[in-house]
Length: 127
Image 1: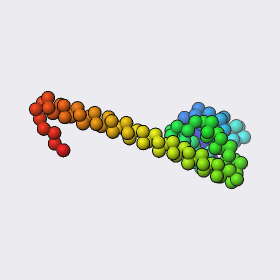
Image 2: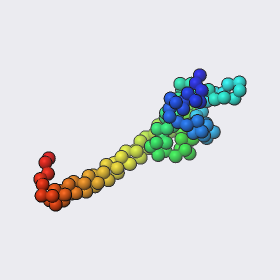
Image 3: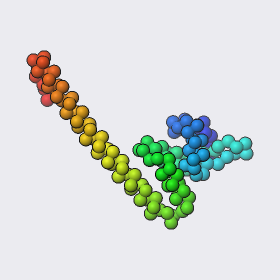
Image 4: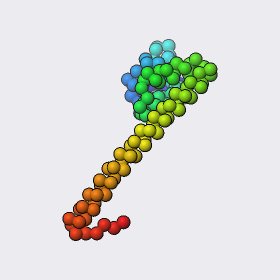
C-alpha cells in the first residue's frame, strides 16, 4: 500500500487534489488504515492517471463522476461507458483540429513577417 505523500511524488498530483478527487467520488476504492490515513494501491494510481487525463482533456468533473458511478455498477454499463469515452475522444479530436487550423493561421503570419523582414533588409529567404 502507498501513502498519499508517495502518490503525490509518483503522479505530480497534490495531496489536496487527491483528497478532492476522493471526496467527489472520482477515486472509487481508496482504502484507509486504522488511523484513517489514505492507502493507495496500483489500481488507485491507475485511476489517478485516468482522471488526470480526462481532466487535462477537458472532461468536467460531473462527467467523470457519472463514469465512475457507471463503472461501479459493473459490466452491464460497459456500453454506456464506451460511448462516453468515444464522445469525449471525438471532442478532443475536434479541439485538436481547431488548434491545428489556428496554428496554420499563425504560421502563415510568421512566414509573412519573414518575407517582409527580408524585403526590408534586402536579403533573400533560404528555404
